[in-house]
Each structure stands twice: as C-alpha cells, then as structure tokens.
Image (tube, rainbow, N blue to C red; front, side, top):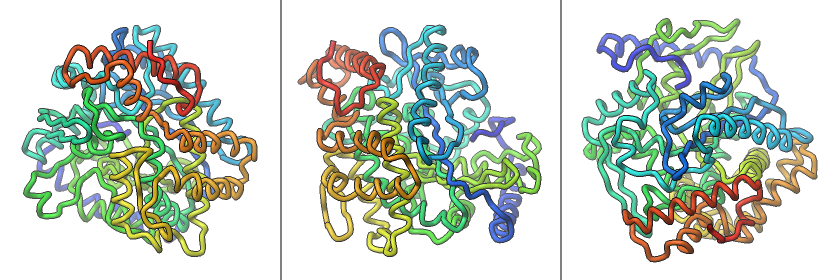
Length: 495
C-alpha cells in the first residue's frame, strides 16, 4: 500500500490485465527464490502508527499539517488523524534493543513536537477510547489520497453492502458504516524480521504459534466507540472493516482479506501462492501508472505481486523487498497495538524476536505439536480476554497466558536473545518489563478499563458521564506515557 496510486476507480480491462501480470509475476518470484542470492543479515525494524487528538482528547484530522513539518521518514495513514513513523533496520546484536529504544524515542519526540506546533497532541495507543461514530461518518476522517479512496471504493464495491461492526464483550456495540472508516481506528506497531528464504517458514510458523500470547500480553484497545468490548478490539474491527464478503460468501467458506491463515507453511512461496489463488485484486494499479520499476538492479521489482500482497492483511505478512544490491524476505508481525510507552514497545519486540529465534531452532518445533486451528483459537481468545486469557499449549493443555509466559516462555525468549548475541543487560531490562507485566497482570487494556471504572464506574455507553470519563482516562494515559514508565507500574490515579 506504500506505492503511488493514480486512480480511485478501475475498469474491467485494467483488472483483467492486472490479473494476468499478477500470475506471471508469481512464476517469476518462484524462479527468483530458487536461483538468486538473498540478504541474510537478520536485521530488525519497526513501524509505529500514531493518533492525533485535540485539547478535548477527540480525534484531530490534522495529519497534513503535522506531516508538513516533518521529512519523508514520516507518512500518512488512511485516517486523517493518523501519522506513521518508521525506524530504519538495524542489528539486534549487542545493544541493538537499546538503540532501537533510543531511535523510537527520538522519532516520537520529533512527531510530538510537530504535532504540538500544528495544534495537536500525540497519542500512541491501539484505539482512541474517545473515538465516536459521528466523526467516522463525517467527511474529514480520511486522508485525501487516491490509494485510500481507491481502497475504500474497491472494498465497498466488492462487498456490495454497508460495513457492519459487531462487537460483544462486557458491553455490546453494533453499527453499520458507509465506508471502511472504522479501520482507521486500528493503530498498530509492526515488527519486521529479515530472514533468509530457507528460514522463513520457521520464523513465520513460530510467529503464528505465539500470536495469541503476543496479543494477550500487549492488548491496548479495550474501548471501541466508548464501549467495553474485546481487550484488543483492533483484531475484530480491522477484520470486519475490510471484509469484502457478504454473509452468503462467509457461509460458503470464502477467506477473509484480514486473515490469520489456515495452515503451517513449508516455504514463503506458499503465502504468495495463496494470495493469488484465493484473493481478487482490489487495487489493480499498473506498474507504469504507479511509477515502479520492472527491475531494481538485478532484482525483479514484482510490482503486481507486492501491491496485491499489501491488500491482503495477514497478521504475519510475508514481505519481498527488491531494494538493495540483493533482494530480501522478511516477516512483518502486524498484530500488536501501538503503545503504551517506548519501554513497552521495545519489551514487546525483545520478547517477539527472542521467542521466534528460540522456537524456530527447536528440534521438535511447537507447530509440530500445536494444531493450526488451536493457534487461531488462542489468537481470538487472547484478543477477547487480554492478559487474563487462557490458551492451549503443547504438554500443558489449557493454561493462563500469564502463567505460560512467566513459567515457560520467558526462559525461551532469554535463550533466543542469547543466540542472537544480545547483551545480557538489554535482555534483562526489556524482558524484565514482560515479567513485570505478567506478575502485575496489568497491560494497557486492563489499565484503561480499571481507570475508567475508577472515574466513571457504572456509567453507560453514549452518556455524558461515560464521555467525560473516557476523556479523563485518555488524558491521564498520555501523561503516564510521557513519563516513559512501563504500563505495569502505572497507578489508577486519574486527574
């Protein structure tokens, strides 16, 4: 979705041409995988989506003003109240995690300063608790770029019906929208892991196996439109917002475009082949119109395959990158929410990278003993219940996530970081945050819910008491965020 898009509508001829070239590029990618050398440096990277709010803690559609004060390292997102920052790739060896924290902190400071100068405040959170349906039903929610208008038009055209958001937790929220606007509320952190093609399947399978654990540990989106729903409501909201299927197609088993997947894989090609086999192109932008090259040096550009891949939202997405002397493959781990603090973000990264490394090198890997269906159930249970969720795990049966992490997975994550040659002090600092979180049983989601109960306990959705409580909680959240203290240490004192 990062490529330029020249139009917001497409003709049948454009779609037919795109499909033919997409199929050709899949075969070209297969040959490239078999014949070419790829980068094998194991670098890591990070993308972070951020929210802009006004003085009243309401979403502020002001990203163009903010981006006008920033360089090209910072980008728009579909929501006009969103800004994205990217951390360049680096090695995790030695003090790499500390350098990642320093880089994220520095860039956040740059964006925060620009936001303040433009009249906004910066919020690093999974979903703004103060978001309202009237805002998303207005004219200002979307960033005015063809790629976003085209995506919105194509999703609605494919679906042929309004977008239904249906969430049921402690409270129920059901509403129909005339656009994919709810997707803009889902701000995430995306972790990147570059791997050699012959190691990709192990890294992806490990990422899928621990997806539920990650979500449970780091849930930070428990309040959608001011309703207490799933602890990580981004998961169902994102899926429902971008669903191109009517109920009849769902009943027939047609796969959703926001997809956990359906099987363990043996090769990165498996995922790109599934993309072409199961999903129609929804942004059939020609290579010349997008301004992308046919070749990047000796590497095939694969414009059609990559653009198509960008419109299939796997929670762990494969990335082919032709930029550089050699092309490379990476896993894009997309399932975590933004925030609450830089310390929490880097702790989540340390846990993910260490655990994927350790699990990927086991003689009898977890995915040989855990069914894919169980991994999917774990993912959904974690999104619903957060840090108090229960999941299935080999040899343990059903176990609480906090217990699983504290007694079993933390040690594996330490082993993985040692294998990655991470300094012991870095491993201790950031995995210590994960240990503190599971012992306190407090992450961003549980803190938000408890804080709301403290200031507006007993309030009902869509009341002035609830709205005032949500604003107070978000304001305190931002004050806590500025301190840098990890979320498990936050008190429930709300101004």
